[in-house]
Length: 157
Image (cartoon, rainbow, N blue to C red; front, side):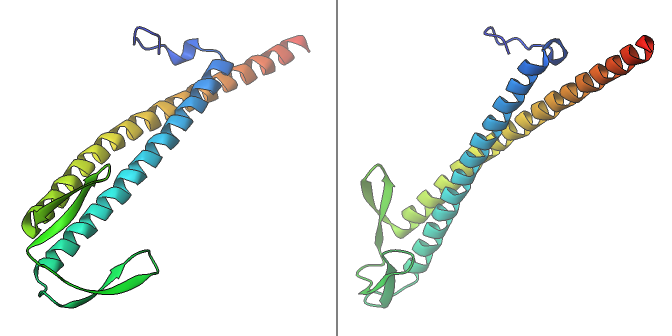
């Protein structure tokens, strides 16, 4: 693409430029795929948090629970209140909400993340199509070069 945002015909590029474009598209695809994975993991975390809040709302005050400190370390505790939860809303800010509001917050975050994920998936599909086109042009140019070499060899003998 040129600086004005106009497309460049792939068949007008030389082999070196095509290989550079192929490499750049491959890097873009990798970055977008990593971003999609991060969004997917984050949405799964919010889905789990919403489920946890829903199950907390069904619990009783004083009920014994195991709280995860890490993936493998849990501590025993008692539920102090089933009326409200403290929700991490990002960048170190926590907000006390009712269980229904906390569950609703998690559902909204999951919805936003899924919308972002769909947008990134569209970009990934576009980049994959562009990469296929670049690979096809590279292949066509290589076949044309081989045919020209064979014709030159045949005409010289």
